Image (cartoon, rainbow, N blue to C red; front, side, top):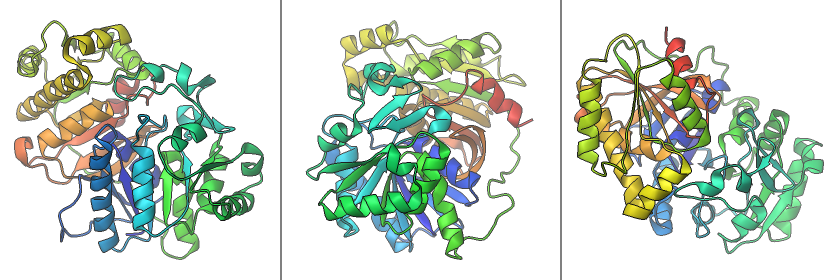
Length: 426
């Protein structure tokens, strides 16, 4: 294993794994911390997917350190801490506390931080995170039900989460390439900075940042900054050229979409799919019972499973989300939707569904846990950051079957993503 990654949610882990496959690394995504002694997968990179983004900081730190211990026992050469390209976190963390703990465990004093992913309209300029041409705090992320982002200045945001100090590698330096970036990071480290936010507005910048970080024990960021890492290993003679690092087996069977994200992107995708596919909108506010919502959905789906994919969505606009949170509380409202969609997923698989898209990081985490998924082989991309994957033996309620899964971050994918994803499999 050359690269070992720790991701703070499931769709983010898939996003990173997809980037590594695209750049020539055979990659396996492990769901949760592998138990001690579990065989190391036959892969160039392993991404350990946690559900720690919205967990209490102490829990997120403990789980991340456990993942690091397994990766180090497997002989990993470099560690990547993956978080969302919208820097999702609260004022208390968890990006800062987890990064601090990983740096300490690796006995490293400095790490870069770069969530930029221009292919999905995420860029960092003068330390500020933009979604397209809009500052993060005006992009809709300020209304996120769990991690509202109200400040686009990442130097300020990260500084509030760590005891260390945070510097900036600005656009003018990044434009000069890997050597200038490397020298600037070295200077910041010598000044006592623990982190450097790095500007990036196109893929050239991400490749240069990756090259500059070739010798770093820890890299933190979104999946975009991993773009340049495989080439570092090739230059060192550790990674051969691979013709098809994302090959997956064929899996036949009915198809379905489960959407729990309330992002603008997913809301648009659900609306588009509704015009083309059988669709059901769940209403947790009218029926705040996970088992009842699941039963309703499975009854609706009973005579619709077949050659045409179906869509079941609990996604809702901000006012509806706010009303549910006011009635149940923020955490309870999120848990209700996750539990309902996880039960629906299990029921659909029991009824023969073998190709499944799940939209939303928290929803994806709940679904794969309910299905007993432990490992995913990463395939080709559908849209930037979202690949098809194949389960490597589903136990539990999945019944020991193979599934094709696409775990989509709420913010990712084109408007026609749900239709396009199944067309790719034809």
